[in-house]
Image (cartoon, rainbow over all chains, first blue to last red; front, top):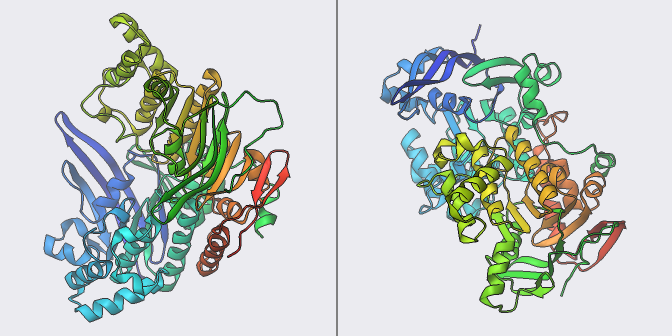
Length: 271
Length: 311
């Protein structure tokens, strides 16, 4: 039997402070299957981003992984020596962050940024990188002639799609998306996420999707985990979390989203 | 000029504090605002909704006089504000209108305590004299925005959460006792779970202080929580406006319909294979909504929609 793609077991992460350690992630365990869209929801400060950074061991001091295992295909990433880890990071586990659209180098043409990533991780030459970049641009719906543009020539939504495209260029098995569309408006958010769903179907990668917006999460994820103050208080499939949440906090999280008033003619208007 | 009829409600409303008419703003060849006409009235909130680049922040900045329009008129209590005014008029205007910005982290000075942030405008505008009165006013402001003065006044911005910082920003704006509050995306950098609290705070201070509130957002769902009226902006044009409930319940413009359909709805799962269709539809709606149009239809007592222009 093939096991899950990612297994997080009893993960604890501390932030070291002057007066001792603050445990930001407390003994958290979950799994992500192959091709699964797994969501991690919770308020800011609940530890969900800390987990995202811990998975690729990008936690920066004072964050400190205090214990646990993070197994990718059975291999514990926490025990991997740094050079071996570099083979995993980006190559097998891609990351898209909330401010990713600002993580492009403003002084480099987008094409050169593709080349940078592809050369570093796959040893691709310029023409190979160019071909791959064109393929990825087509995939995320940006005209390929714009590869020679600089990041500032694109809108925020397009920059976010470019980051996703660069991430996909390495064909990762798992993509960690930490609030990938929170800074964007709802139409652009929907455009990007529908594309991600299509791409995921086509390429079979798994996604760890982190957001505080449960409504959005319910549209995308297969399973959802709810974090509260560093603990994973509930994990279930999307139907159970939406219709029969067990934990009080999950219910509270649902009721805290500013909702549209009941719509009458709207659905027909759009249909 | 391409001036839309100003917003008019059915009920009798107080005289507007600020009225703009036919506002235009060009940045080089880009027309950021085209014929914006609206009024802000005491005790009422108007939401300006649009995607990034739609011109909503430009509009807010012009109304707060942080930017000047290329064309159009702006009246403050019946006095034109687009023409040069005296220093005293300018100061009165700046006191009357205050802004709360999107980023609660960047809008407070990290080197000063919460007390300093509130005491300074109070003292500058002569709303409090002497240490005791100042302290008492700072406490009152913090209580008003739902913070405990004993726990917050002595703290530095980094010791507060995003929601608390945004509350301090609102208190800072209120310290000047403004008549108009312009809130530019005040909740979009905050967690969903604390957004409602901030929205409720804005709605309450608007009611209690009879503030005219201009609420800028890309999230039409939050607009319904604070604003009686909404303006949907696309490519610098008002495409649909009127009573928030009417616009949300019965959107008539293609772009408003697109915007509402994209609000996350847990009952509507994304289905693989639909992205090309949605992207194509969104692109088509944008293409159709972009051209200038002067034809405005009144579709309800307080509900207006702009016809599509020629592509």
